[in-house]
Figure (cartoon, helix red, strand yellow):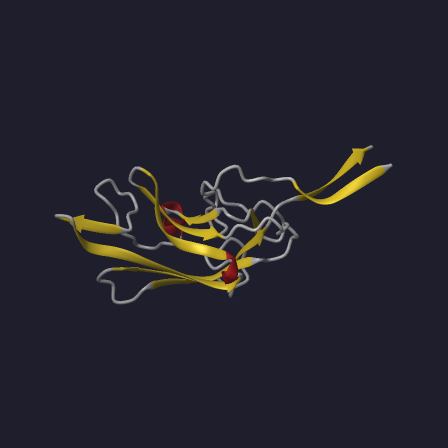
Length: 177
């Protein structure tokens, strides 16, 4: 007799290394599935990178080599810093934490870490979405705000919605007795 096991997790996260995803539907960051959904596993991190900020024409703090930095120090004292606020349209409860992370020497990203959840499955539905991202440097009068509402309905523009399907791929496995 054959038993069919449904809902077997096919993807197991061996480590919780950040899986950087360039967001915004820009070149090099095409979603992995139809309907403009990025597929991500629970427990991974979604990263806003220097390339994303360049694509969105956001002015950010740079070190002497032109690299994105969250703060600039002089004599050990912070003289300028950047503040990022991400507003979620859906799924804010899936977020464990968010903030600046140095992923390599002098390489910074703003990461949104998702909570672990072994029972979530990829179902081609939106579990998490960004409605806007604001970025403000010390001394700026106003924050630079990107709204992701797809107001102009034009594909591959800076205001395309950023949508995520969060979970694990489900496969069926047949076992012979």
